View 1 (cartoon, rainbow, N blue to C red):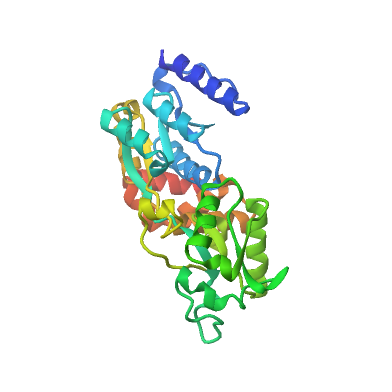
View 2: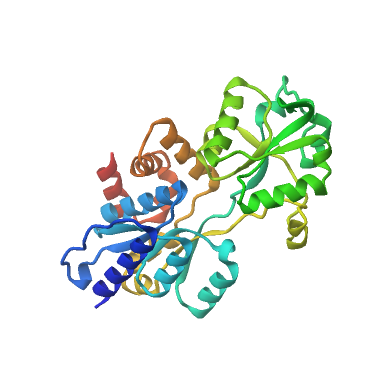
Length: 328
């Protein structure tokens, strides 16, 4: 039976991830919970709870959320052991993803968002407004003109660019960019020890109204909380990226389902095929979660209440009403 196959797969995934999961109940196959595969990052967890709240309250179906790496998500979808993934960063596994979709291993229901960005950011108050200290700072190539503004406390004659974390692919790219654009002549490239240290440096400077330039990405609570401007760069190309030239590429983040879910739950599949948000909306929800010390489920409830006009179009009216009654 599918129930035992799915349970075996879940236990294997949790063993790999060194995480625990409570035992499944004795439901019959027709009443088995739908399984959402959850990545280990906040935006994915947030979207998982948005879908869970809608499915459980609007469609009277039970949902289990299990942790899964991206390879496990793909494998689980292909084997009908995971029913839904809300954030599959398809371009990060492009060849495997495209082949799986072409072979019909699982279904791409919709694009959750594809406006995610990353690169070198500055606080918007530095570049916009009557009191802007760097009104002509528009592109990465403009940075040498403003090295004094971003002075490195440890070497004041040069500026400081906060980079990505050592070991990240973004760090390798940015290190190449420093040389390719000649930024190393006027700036030091500083690698924070962790993403927490990076966000702390940005937040501290922003709260004080001080200059800051460095790497960040979205969707994140930082971008949702603070008004930041991504410095422009030349268009992304694979060849340029290999040399540290051009912008980061945005990634198509998709909502995917197993073939079995599409066949056996067409109403839920229809909802998922309408599921579409944005990087900005996701960042706002993550900022809410941070500011209010809220759980991912609380952030999902807040999102549904605050963005009724958006998700009302995803579902039939009766489903919308049932969900709103349940979360208010």
